[in-house]
Image (cartoon, rainbow, N blue to C red; front, side):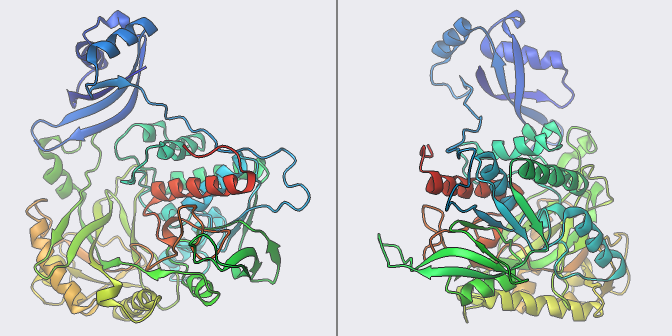
Length: 554
């Protein structure tokens, strides 16, 4: 097949127009096109009065004609052979695994990273044991709604903890900026489609699923892992990681080897291969691992607020007269501003047609996040507007000082909101003019269980407030209406990423604990559903190669 890049057509083109563009690009008749497949569809909205769709298309022609066309176009980037994007397993266990003294690998955490790691291990015949501290996704959904509707927080089953991870209650974004030469992202998306995600996630440029579809998809992936011999345990918190001392070797700092884990109920599970896919909010797990000698470092993250606008304002600013077009859907944005102070402010986790949700996982704290359904048809658009912070500049005291800062800000937000899980909020106009808000004015608050209007300048450090007040008017130059006085800020956003990095080597193992594979967001190696899933695949491959010693990863 041939891969055609940069086929540009107007929004309302027909299928005949697309076939004509294929034939024009290749200079062939339409009878020479045996079939074609959309590989990717994006859009160029820089000219709002002339928004274009941009296609990458795989075209099937006869073998003889394909060779002629490749010789004709030579090294031109616009026409190339279609690359192999199929996934190829790096190893396969004997059907009788585990035999004798063979131990099954353990996966701690069942979010996107843990799910893909467990699925790949199961597909390679390694029958993983998955330990998830939270509940299955149906029970977890009920527990999460209990916070949103009744102000009842379950610390072990909420937006952060439970089957599916934090990504289950999000916009379900499925794109990433990670380098992916092996097309592992395609493997992730293909597994999602097998589990019930819409086929379009394989070709739209910014695919998403939404919470309701994610719930069903996660259940089906769990069932597949079990069918392949895996075991999944819910409400199983790991209280201790067992490490046996080993001598240093090969320039590694390694002085420990994983031998198994102990659960909160006292059960010991032996294993020399443990995937640590605990998510960015497993603070007690960070403390446990650090106390037991696993090496980690403090890393940067970001803090800020959620901002809400009418989705119609964002659509008009981004798409002009084409706002509301069904192919374009609800508009998103990505913004960044470099402040005079040297700080950076940027938009994060933008949720078109979504809601702001309560994402606390510890009693006495308020945390915000964003969520959308597949339809993205709620009234408001929201995103986090956050300020980057670093351990060197802002929390240098110790490795877990970033966790301490997160807790401090979340407890302060809890107090400012009324100590009942309502979130503190303020109109953008009042925030920019340094005056408390007393009434909403046009933009409804989507955060549940409720908001308390007031003065958000008390909710973050002064440098962050200064940076946000500088950035919001600048963002208005890119998105008309962004700094509208009626827009609403809700606080606080503190869980943008893990505040630590559990360091690993090129073999994906902890730099001082052999057999421990830190992975995904919680370990500092991913940011979002797709990149976490890709990382899960990589660590599963590394474990399979270590356990089975077969073919090498290309």
